Length: 303
Image (tube, rainbow, N blue to C red; front, side):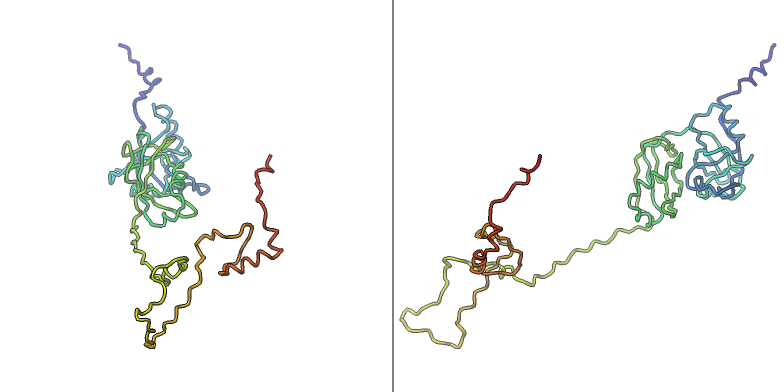
């Protein structure tokens, strides 16, 4: 019988997923210049041999990986940014190592996965300082462009205005792990840790210092029961020492009441109360005559 081992070597099994182990290090240990673009995102850096192996397998794009710390059985998900790491090593953001409880040089398991596209996510800020951001949804949307996945239970870190904010991923739909590459995702925020609702104090009504009835003008025309009483026997009333002198009439309250008898064309800028005869005398003055006349329409001069 013939054996086709050479044929099998030419066409490897494409159903086998990518699954291997690496030593993990934080981005600060990456040789060369500091890579803040990796530290402020959710992607890892893998060695070139991983790319060579992935191209030989039937891997779904974009490449997404499940990272597991087998010691405590804790895992998260991430995308890959570059394949420039040293052989046998991977570099990841510090917040990701903190979630997995990893130290520098610990062994992690990397497995290629295919997860659903995100439709909903809920975050909880870990400090009330996050409320100082004017538009938190826009800031989060801009920062999540450096992420490829979200995993329920992760504590991600975003940087805005030289300040790092930590957000806990409370919920993701349609699954506990989702990809956020080119998706429409609804975002909600839970109250930050340590946030308390402000107490609502009822506004106390200030007592009125002026009686509104005193601001009303005196009634004009016929007023019932106004005047002095007289005796039926014709005798004068006895003076009991009381002051029966009529009270001085209050000035007419004008503020807030339209003056329907206001002369046409008169512009008055003073706030003091003036008598009617003073207003009529000013109308006789020649310098006020120039304001009298018909109005004009500004629309007439428009083309």
